[in-house]
Amino acid sequence: MKDFKYYAPTEVIFGKNSEEQIPALLKKHGATKVLVHFGGGSAERSGLLPLIRTLLTQAGIPFRELGGVVPNPHLSKVREGIALCKKEGLDFILAVGGGSVIDSAKAISYGLCYDGDVWDLFCGKAELKAAAPVACVLTIPAAGSEMSEGCVITNDEDGQFLKRSCGGDPARCRFAVMNPERTYTLPAYQTACGITDMMMHTMERYFSHDDDMTITDALAEALLRTVMDLGPRVIANPNDYRLRAQVMWAGSLAHNDITGCGTTGDWGTHDLEHELSGMFDVAHGAGLAAIWGSWARYVRHENLTRFVQFAVNVMGVPNDFKDPDGTALRGIAKMEEFYRSIGMPTGITELIGREITNEEILEMAHKASNGGTSTLGNFKVLHEVDMVAIYCMAAKSK
Ligand code: NZQ
Ligand code: ZN
Image (cartoon, rainbow, N blue to C red; front, side):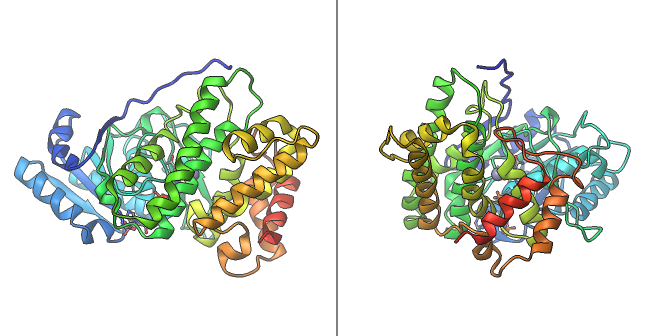
């Protein structure tokens, strides 16, 4: 078990009517003038935004609004938010939505504390040192941004659509309001994308070379089995509070690092996927499902024992002691079978609705490796040539 720091300072307010606590939470965390940041309309239609407007007005908390955040959130919207906050003297950002809205809010908060171009922080030209305070009202359990130190933004300004992350402790939400009832309106596809993403956040941490991980493994395996049990049931029963609540909390636990203590983590699948969702504007969770099986088959021999453990403890595959590779492969196939059962794609063709070209694969690998100068992942360190190979496997995968 490696040395680690565990830091999850976000105050979580979970349950029915939790929104009513927003004004008190804002005051407690020092907000004087708030930017309410949201997406494309779901929070308006559900009545959540009107409720927040009423609550803030009644509490005498001044606020301005900025909507229009798109999935795979754009840098241009971040700039709009930074300019608005500066012009209006806003000192606290309340994100109302999912990972895209929260990440857009986080990026605005970075820009308010950084003198240069905010994109510098995402392309490695500068380090994140401070951020204005951010909090969220979560409407989709998926990205885990409500408790994570991460933030992912797509640069829509130069035609490249590079999707890059920038995180650290300053990025963490001061509080997260989570009412499972707010997720009833999620379409089945978005629910499935969320289930896939939270599983992948756990699996990225699980596939490592670290030993003595009994407690962390047990947490991770329980989370994965639980989410696989809940997933199909919540899709079939979208208005079931007990199911929605458990899935919602699982999404936060999957990415607040409780399943990563003492491990290095891999994150290769995530980084490969960010090129897909940046370039083809697909949902992040669906992109992960489309690529994971190919990644897993490509890297499994780096630590076959780990894949056998996953197959047996998570996927319920009988252990064939004479054929560990067969056991590992059956575990990977069963994971893909699960993805398909909840409507997720397990190959790039299904993901983007057409065959990907060789040029597009080369372009993605080139971008993911920063022009062949950097690697991805830890379970197996991936060079540009490996990235091309995995994308090619996923292109052929059904
Ligand atoms: O824009 P609106 O109208 O709100 O619609 C959204 C959006 O179209 C809709 N939606 C959200 N809540 C809803 C709802 N529809 C009906 N009812 C509700 N209650 O769902 C769509 C997807 O929303 P989005 O915020 O994009 O989803 P998600 O939470 O999956 O976030 C994905 C983004 O997070 C990044 C991803 O790369 C992607 O850009 N990630 C962020 C991470 C982090 N900050 O730690 C880690 C993740 O690995 C991930 O990379
Ligand atoms: Zn993710």
